[in-house]
Amino acid sequence: MNEPGATQAPAQLSLKAARKVALAALVGTAMEWFDYYLFGLAAALVFNRLFFTELDPQAAALAAFATFGVGFVARPLGAVLFGSLGDRIGRRPTLILSVVLIGVATALIGMLPDFYAIGIVAPIMLVVLRLLQGVAVGGEWSGAMTMAVEHAPPAYRNRLSALVQLSSPIATLLSSGAFTLVLLLPPESFDAWGWRLPFLAALPLLLVAVFLRVGIEESPEFQRLVATGERVRVPVIELFRRTPGRLGIAILVSLLGVGGFYFMNTFLVNFGANERGLDRQLMVNATLIAAVVQVGVTLLSGRLAERFGPGRVTSWGGLATALVAFPVFWLIDSGSPGAAIAAVSLGLAAVILAYGVAGPTLALLFPTELRYSGVSLGYNLAAVVGGFLPLAAQASLGWSGGGSWGPAILFAVFGLATALGGALARRVVAHD
Image 1 (cartoon, rainbow, N blue to C red):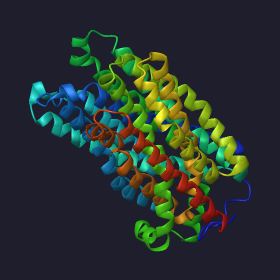
Image 2 (image 1 turned 60 degrees about the vertical axis):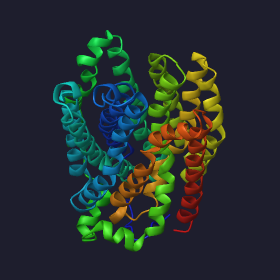
Image 3 (image 1 turned 45 degrees about the horizontal axis):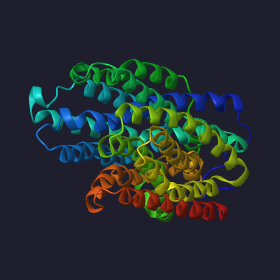
């Protein structure tokens, strides 16, 4: 299958070398997601109380989720910046830069004084650091996935891409596990310094990620672009000029993976703990159990994509999400701890069926010279919408009278949008 405007991949790519690149991409991206996910958990459990203390509980929750969503607004800027760098100077140096930026921003959040110490400056600085996180993530996942796809032999592309997607459950386990440990502290110790420890852990993790990324080789397809002089001067302009329809499809494909994941791991944690009276430790533990389920579903999605194609599997995940949207909330509404854990696992499994193969689904939409920019911008424009899904779900509780049907409808809509994106991607790639 030839991609429009792309040069042919090298005739033989070492599977061993491709696995090494995929592993380096996995570890680095897991570190970035760890940093990013910490903010989501802190938004649900900490920031509403320590950084928006003068607001009533509902308004404070909305403010915390809005701050969480600000990071997603910054992600298209990061996509343009890092996508252009990735398509101009190379995938490898761009990925090193992105991981350094988010590691430093995350550590600084852990050092930030709260509202009681410096007043209004605290939430302002929190927003600024969240913006920096968003810029960095705007070029991270797409770059790591582009590297994995471009190094992989075609027969193993879906499998190795799914391996990189394991960065998400690994980061969930690390971030949720870190908060699980610090929540064991007395409440006053947790509020004073305990919540900061997971953020400060970003610094040693950053050193490991940089070490691994320095050791990988540049993408062979990018090297070919350099050798043949086919690099594009301003990739983002060419992207809108040559492939606007494919960019729209990329946004649809990405909506569920971005929005649905944070819906489950951020909004549902807050909903179960604060709206339905479930223990907050239970809800955090539910995300840990769901992360283990996520590992299995991610690997399964890669294998299914090898047989049926990534576009079709993306559609299956979207449809599955729409089907389970209401049952997820029925389980939470029951008030049973076991049902709450099952709800998080069920909802996240449906989302991950689509997200597990998002990498090859997106990468095959774009030619090599525009791939980093195309994958980055498509994924992160979707993030602008998806990142505010927790906020929209929280607001929907108002017009649904506190009932769970409002958030359930939003969750189902995102699933159907990605199901459509997968079907369109499959049709477009089949005609290349």
